[in-house]
Image (cartoon, rainbow, N blue to C red):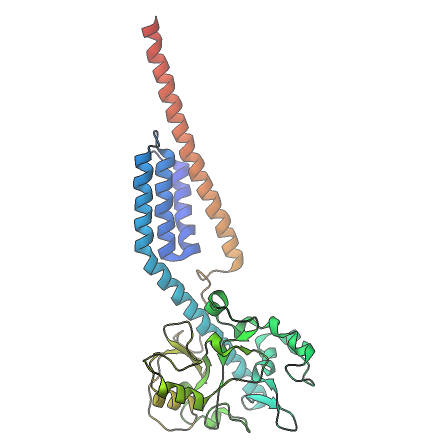
Length: 353
């Protein structure tokens, strides 16, 4: 198979766009698979044996790349969810800046009945002012009108992998507060940053829960500290406590300094309690931020960390370069076949004479 200058340039563009669109693992697989396809298309004979060999090589490459592809997907999902947690924490800290304290775990009526979730209160700080205005604070969260807003859950409240892979109901929040008198979310009072004497970087603000909790995002319900600790103490294996069994290899949380962090799934009950309480005084080490500096302006990785507009143009380039390569290879093949046929005809003419 021969390559023209045009097809070589198209191959370079195709390789770069494949890596940009799909990442290293999938991008390399796409490039090698395409080269195999071009070998078949450019073959003068296009024999069955060539097809079988190339197809077998592609299958082997797929098998070799599969662990890397899966790992890359898991890492992308974990970082995306960590970023969601960090965005919510930034909104909570902005609420604190305006009100001098974190929001209450829930807003109660005069009789002490829970009416609204903290997730509703911080909507303006997540740039969802219209949704906040549509929500009626003079009605309970499960009123006929407010229930119509549950499917309009802000994207910040949903886990990327849970949305794609779970059978959870629409409008279910994945990120929850851990309520308790010793946490950032007590029942009858509001907590200020100055109250977090253990350190903002050593006190968990929110955690990622499993979809099994099935908490509608407007419902004034989260998970209690007692349930987390009791579930951790009674678990039969080294897995996470019930309700915190998220889809990732780590327990994801965000501390009061705004940093998303990942904790081992077998974290003990004692350590979880120390991380969730604001003034326990326990000496404890926490993992570094998932994004390094908590104040950094890190953005979540999309499938390859590029914007939608850039992705659109890259897809156009990817399709165009692939089309050019196929057209060029087929053109070269047809030209060779035509030249061979013409040569054969020229050879036969003297013999006929």
